Image (cartoon, rainbow, N blue to C red; front, side, top):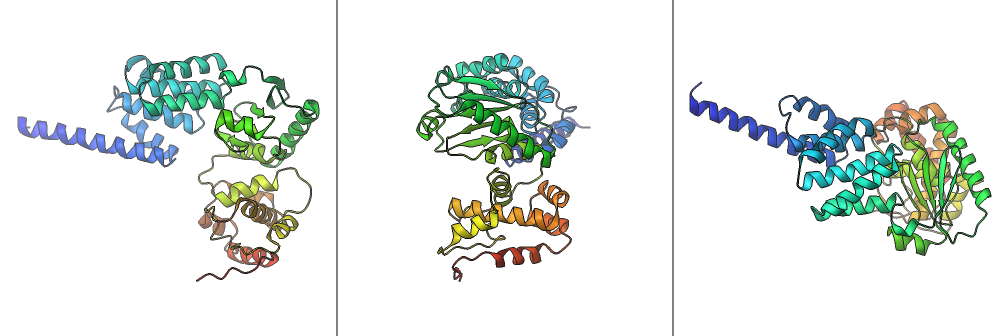
Length: 352
């Protein structure tokens, strides 16, 4: 090969690599972690010293709920890099060790990421995780109570019956997981706040929430026993390719452990309201006000499970797209949707 052609080949190869890595980062940003790992691991042999690639693989393994596989990649980046990659690796090591229930190491690396202060986003990531995991001063006086599947963290001013709260949530966990049969990577960390105001002041959230990938929930006093637990448990039922807003929230409503028919509750919420209750149009949208969306979604999940059974629902739940719903329900999904919608009684919305 002539020298000029040789350098052209090298340049073309490097350019192709850069474009490919950039594309993989975009796929990572879109949540396609399995795709990223499949292609990034193939690139490893040709780019063994690329810290960008190692950081991508470490982050993808973390996001894909494979923390042990992420460790060697993140540690190598942390040890060899001196810039922003080191800070990101430290932040993700903090998350990985949290998932592995190694709290001391988790705190250490999140603190290191903050101290490095390499970029605004990397520092913010580490600070947010430190708050989410309960490592900041705001949590110093929280009371810890541990059950078989949950570690509870009670706000020091919580005035409810702690023993009854723990018993009810543990029973909820068992009931929900008897359906999903999930294998949890760790115990659920369940933060119990005395007021929504204190919750918002520390976490920035106006109400309770769950972060299923970390097996963690921050609960306000008004939340049901099972809603956020369902988000966490169902997340680990199997590899979930896609989540739908309507199905994800509807499942949490159905398993919230509150008594009564979800259909009856949806009818009560819709009474006298003008609402677009189309299942298809609300599949991945939050156009309805939250109480209406949650009520309709919960009733629809109840309908699917009661009409077609648990196993079919679990098969569909792994990939919550409309296309997969139509496949799993053997071509009659749209008929099921029409039947369900006919059972609701909103004031018809005139759509142009």
